Length: 371
Image 1 (tube, helix red, strand yellow):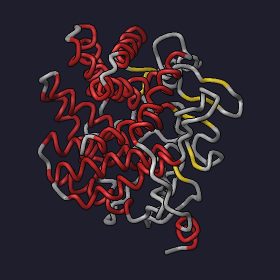
Image 2 (cartoon, rainbow, N blue to C red):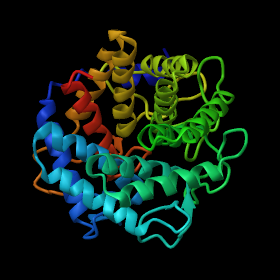
Image 3 (cartoon, one colour):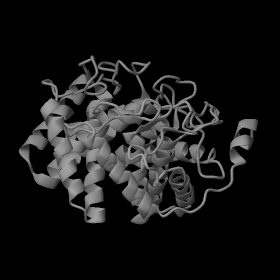
Image 4 (cartoon, rainbow, N blue to C red):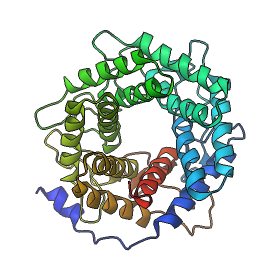
């Protein structure tokens, strides 16, 4: 074990925190993030240093929709269903004519469609359609899925319509877009969406080293990817594999998930970045990555019957709950999840991104519902 891992592992195990309390606090924070924009979309983040909310973010608002719909059922609070549908209506209103979803926040000067963002909003439209049978949401989902398929290269990769806010034009974490297409194939009964999803995961696996590490898998630094993007890629491989009945995809996801689990600290956190030898490449932890990996470990336990995945998930959830401030007088902070811990770490420094709260909610609901 290298020196960085020893240093990070020296932290004590965090105290137990009531997951239901933390879940409710995160939901309330996301509701305030939605209210902060005044448009139906959810603010991308709260900047604690500047003490201001960012603009509404189409990408992550899209995948908050299924989280709020699930939470409405989980909690019996119908207000969250209403909020989710307002998000879906807003997404439909701003969908670009070709079917794609814009990069960046609503106040960004760049108005271009991007692959990843479109895939994430596709999750929201599909969930809204299933909940309401409102033809607007089905139409938006179909147009988005058709646009994604048309933009895909023959080998399964997406090279066009990369985000102008990411350093690299091609990436393996687009398997999360493939996951959205695979889900669309089920909901919309269209097999070519699953065919496109499978092609993308096959391409992603061509980027995998024997130890499970993926090339081209970060927003900025492909030599030291974030656990956030590692988890995006892994979840995509897993879920496409399950939908397509492809055991090789599931086994590949398990290989990555197992490698990441080996880097978990005693307190439940993961190093925020990992290198190609699966060694810690940062002293801080990426809170979103912790939550996403907790989801993956729980999904693997549920789908494979191997309960050995669950302790790592429970430790990650416990850590995230231990750093959530549920008593802050500042309502813009209370219940939110920081991008990094310490908050001054290298991912979303001093910010509370909405996607951290979203994935923490998903991970906690899985745990509370037994997977």
